[in-house]
Length: 171
Length: 133
Image (tube, rainbow over all chains, first blue to last red; front, side, top):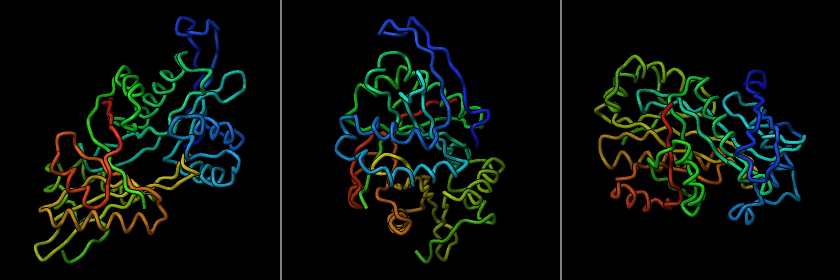
């Protein structure tokens, strides 16, 4: 997957902006120079603050290069006024369940604090849903930490249903 | 359990049986799975043939210092002992491939499975959501 065909300009709807500002935003594939802004968004989060540190970008840049080289993985940013203000990662995963369905896995969804409540998050999720459909997925899935109850309501408003329980093992 | 090995095209009949699904779509998915680098599909085999399967997907992300993590799923097994062997394989393989975390999904209503996974050290930490397209 390359940027062509995956970058979509979306007009922000004024009626969805709490701030009163009319903002245009673009969703596009992340570039290497976006990594610092993405890591700041990951760290500026109740759960991410304890585990992500933007002071040393080296491991993040290595991860970016790996993701960027993998046609099944897509890291995207929402850009407003030339700045990344939102991000998510989308991975295409084949499988045997559900009659051998291809699915889109959505992860690491973040909207910068000063852009929350403006409809950007919903646009970003809708973009991931559309992109997954375009690539032949029959469903999209995501997991959200059990403590993020506000995020759970957000996903349910976008048509997601709670269908499974996620377990984690630290190795 | 005699062996856990990578799945191949000739395992299709056994996989159709384990997933109780039509062969055509499953054969196409099997081809996709065996040619996707970040996915490892294995089958468990004993004297009776193929008795289980599991899929490990290894992904890199920016979160957690650019951590590599594994997703273990698509587990189907003829009996509980086979599930144990597949879980142990998944944990070892994820560790070998440099994953710092391994995720595992289970249906909402399977309280018995949750206790079983806990014995391997898995903690319940996520709510999973799905949207059909």
